[in-house]
Image (cartoon, rainbow, N blue to C red; front, side, top):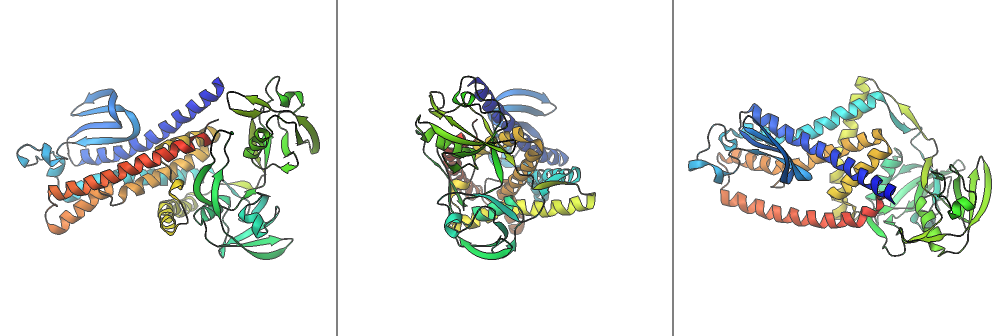
Length: 459
């Protein structure tokens, strides 16, 4: 239990560090350009709320605050109400030209996007794992899934989706994910023969890990197919457990339980807990040979479900290879990847309005922290790719003209430039208050959804 708690704590600490880093470089962009334009900066803070650590250098107080989901740069003269005599001084933010203020507002999102771009170039030059081929070989088809109902079988190879050549599993999952309830045409090859198969993605639902919890609805589409992989026993079974008594060894592949093929560790949890303590028959693969054992699961008070005393992991069939690129190729690949990452959020919003994605699919700060920490613990290179994705999305979201974002300030500055004078303070206040009320409500709603998903990341 203590090990599990420590792992979860480490996961969240790593995630918070990663998110705080992205926030810090965002605010650093505002800070540097503000200083460049000789704006007096009163405070540079990583986080909001109570200041936990602070020091002052020159005119600026630098601090780390209690709430790590953000940060801010407090500049003199940002708020007209704080300006003495209603006339900004030369070192006030509002005392600068429209161009200077726009540069300060743009700098934060720009740094996030530029950081991701440089990071991707670095990753593509040192080498990333990429599919051996773009076709998708199916390892497992879930029972009662869209794929099974459409006639897709294990061993089939998917070569195209909606007439476009497949680009690997990640791209395929995204396309299926944003097609909830829509017709999707797949080109499938079976025994050398091409087949055109129509599937309709259903909502992805993660089964409950114990009998007291509800399934988790993910808000995106799924057709129930999985790559070729194996669920293995990751560590030696717990001493005195049913698995140890049955002779299960570290590295064994869990092939079947009570005759049902195993492709996901969730299936093992479901079948073991579903036994309610009755004996289960397990088929293992060990050194290329099948081994049949029987075990009687025991109820565990800590997890509130029946267990056999093993920790599981995935081993993927090797379908990737390391690809290193020269500077020019890395730059070209980065441009393509950055564009895809930049536009992904707009694709999701478009499909949300079309009803092909549900709001449950969106993640707030809690899920983002958990995912980043989890991926960091799993593989540092995968974490860096995720860091680039989140950094780009953070930059893009802040450039949207949403009144309380950097993009909102740029919108107000654009209006000021066109009119020759800013909108009245009353008009700006009304717009910002309405936007703030909406985003606070949305933030609370997304955070509630996050806590409903948190069990997905706990070990």
